Structures are given as C-alpha cells and as structure tokens.
Length: 215
Image (tube, rainbow, N blue to C red; front, side):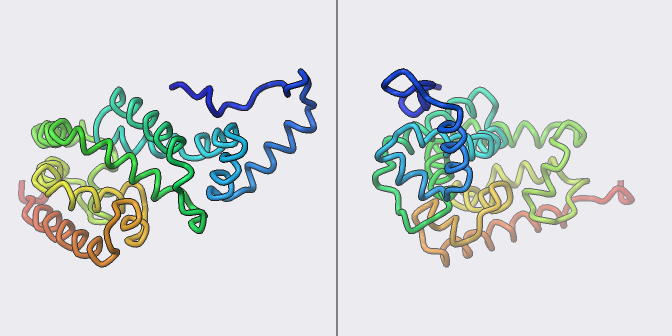
C-alpha cells in the first residue's frame, strides 16, 4: 500500500526532529478521537497514519472473513486510500470513524459478490471442522451453531446482498444498528428490519439442522 502521502517524515523541513517532538505527536494521536485525527490531517496529512494504524487490522480482518486474504489486502488498502482522499467530507461530529470506514469497505466488497457467495457455498460443502473456529457462532450472533456451520454458510449465500451486509456488520464488525445505518447510508429502522429478516432466516436454518444426537 502506498502510504507515502500520510506517513510522518522522520525529520522536519530543517532536517531535525527531536525525540521529544516525536513522543508528543504520538501522545496526541493516541488520545485524539478519530474525528480529531481526520480534522488534523486536513492540515497535516501525516496525521492520517494514526487513523490507519488504529483501524487497518479490523477492516482487513472483516474483508478477509468475507472474501480472502489476497482480496482483503487490496480492499483494506483501497479503503484507506479512498478515506484519505475523501477526508474533507467526513462528518466531524462523529468521533468514531469505524462506520465510515466499514461503509467504504462494504462498497468495495460489493464488487466481489460472486466470489463471496462461491466461498460460502464451498464452506457449505466442507466438513464442519474445516470452517473457522467460531464462524457460525459469530455470524448467528450468539446462536449455538457448532453443529451446523455448513448449513449456515449455505444460508449466508442465499441472503440478499443488503441483508448479508447488515448481518455481518453487526456480527463481525460489531456495529450498532445506528452505526450500520451510517455505514450503508440507510435509516436505522431499515437496518433493524433487514437484520431481523436475516436473523430469522439464519435461525430457521439452524433449527432445521440435525443435532449430534440425531445423527
């Protein structure tokens, strides 16, 4: 990823930068809200590196769980490049930038819907033990699905793209309905409706799965 546009320079324009200055900058960025970092980056682009460092792993992990590591590398990188280019449009009244970043990532992921669906269908044909350790439980949001991961993956493949986005932003990104609404640009009520529909379909699949005793 080309981060040169916001990587802090090791030395100031006069060729010097004291350790104290560096420590002060680190302390300021660690204590600042996301909104403060975005605002400061408008004057000092290098401050955007702190936002990148704060959220890159989470955005990458979310994209990887939905797609694959190679695609996640590209999506996470592009998410922050887009965010940097659009930072002047960020709503500074929102201290937490996660919904904004996940919204950008979700738009990028949407370009790979077929890949995502193929992955879920492949998981549906795979032995339970080969699926991620807590894959089903986190998707189903506390449902006991340890014996039905394959069916769950198949159900995810059958969800509409809009319902799947909402479900996974809640279950994996751990956003609230209001935050998901901001991420996707829809009312919170719409998010709750989609989430209810998705959870109903997921629960129906899990309820239909045979238990170990029935096997």
